[in-house]
Length: 108
Picture 1 (tube, helix red, strand yellow):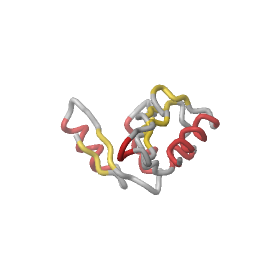
Picture 2 (tube, rainbow, N blue to C red):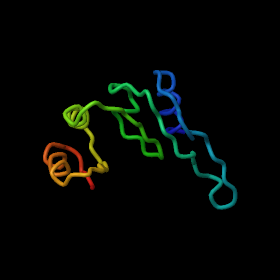
Picture 3 (tube, helix red, strand yellow):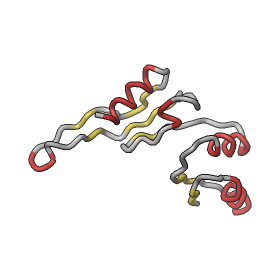
Picture 4 (cartoon, rainbow, N blue to C red):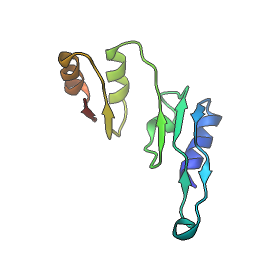
């Protein structure tokens, strides 16, 4: 199963599974599917496969950051960019993020 492969390779490269990431087996009509519990990874290196590739499963990588410039640099350093959510107390800060994310659709 591809999603489990991503999770296993992430763990081998030093990432930590905080929650989830196990295979789920369902019965009945859904018995032939490939399902996992939602997974949260931390300690993921920016260059790691889990950080760089699109994982079409319920896997989230959580990255700490020091400032907004670091967030923008890291978010724009990817060939992909699906969507992200940014919560801020300032409308000005939200406009700042919307302007500088090149490949992302950012929701507030």
